[in-house]
Image (cartoon, rainbow, N blue to C red; front, side, top):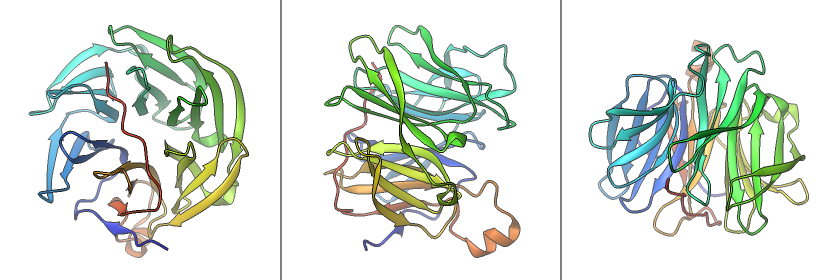
Length: 291
């Protein structure tokens, strides 16, 4: 079993959405509730934090000067130097009880992100795509907690998680237009294993799923629905994962303190940490860039 290490001393309330910025050698992630973007330089072992001033569900690299992000109040560019917010569009202006959650760029450079009710108790969320020209299109609705996304170009597939369903669904995906169709369930997570949260894909086309309340990251075959491996963590609320490092062989894992009692936090002092499994035995795919 490969060893799981803590990357840095910082702990997030709700760490999420890790991305590897290949050009700058940074592992980046968000703390949704604090409205923070964290950047850890692997070479210099230094943490830099941008304060956004509102909740941030997810982000992706847009250019050398900007991130594109899904915030509490819609899509925006974030200035990478100072964290200044340049709004693009807010498709849920009329739904103040919702916020954006997980998001990612597809292979064609569109930014996909979903929403969820702050109350987490009804199917009031939707899945949107932000096109390169700044227009927003709704892809799905009646979602409770919009979460993990992944694409496989080889299979022309888009994989998606609405956490409370305990399922991963697959759509046929048209890279040229971004159209998705033919939704079907491909993976069913046993309830005792925790809720499926964030997700990534490796070079072999296998899916990696973080388990909220399940204390693990698992690897699955999307064609057979079979679980191939499990990596246990010393914390229960595991939120997402991505591959990083020069050869994309290090697995970075975000976690949360949110939802844990004082007693649980005593038992899980590392909750909220960013973890890494170096040379985990698998290779990931580079993060897609917006535009």
